[in-house]
Amino acid sequence: MKGNAEALEQLYRDQYRNYRDIMAGVVGSHDLAREVVQETFARALREQRKFRGEGSLEAWVWRIAVNVALKMRRSLRREWSFDDEHEAAARETAPDRDVRAAVRALPPRRRLVVFLRYFADLSYGEIAEIAGISEGTVAATLAQAHNELLEQALAEIIDVTERFEARKRIGQAKELLMTQRKMTEPEAYRWIQKTAMDRRTSMVVIAGTIIETLGVAATAG
Image 1 (spheres, rainbow, N blue to C red):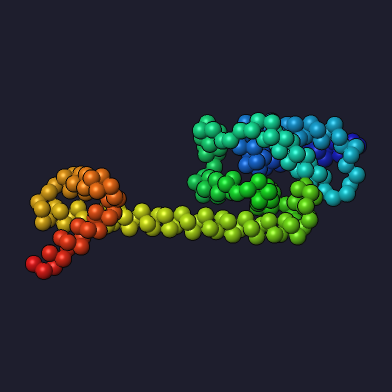
Image 2: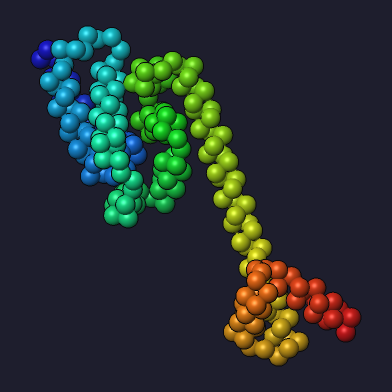
């Protein structure tokens, strides 16, 4: 028993930040995650008699942490607030922030399995033990998460590309209005914007029309 208590104390000292950061992904903020970690280790110390050495002590503590975190989510029924995101963002680099945001958007089981696998660095067997599922289900869940994250990444790339092309076409249309209609750049932009509003369409559509008409006229000239 004394050995378990000492091991738990050592685990707390060595892995506190890791537990806090992973649980923040489950409950939504570092403040709540700190509560989860404190309650997790307090419960682990109280219930250390239940650990019989089947599997690793760390996996056993993770299972307690997940149960505590999920119970907290259910009781609070809360989503991320601006303050929570601001706090978490201050602790993460931009790539970490983007990755964690994408993972948080996953369905609950996929989100949990991804966090435990790639952020907590647990094995399939440990994750299966913690989540109460088979190792095959862990593998299948990770595969589903990979596909969903890939789709998100591709959607973001397409969105960025489309926005770039839209800005490019509007820029070309402004140049044509400035050279052929002798408008200033602000006048050209406002003209495109107003015309789009009047015709109840997008500025990109109006820009395309300008490029087709004035561009052809410029080529003919």
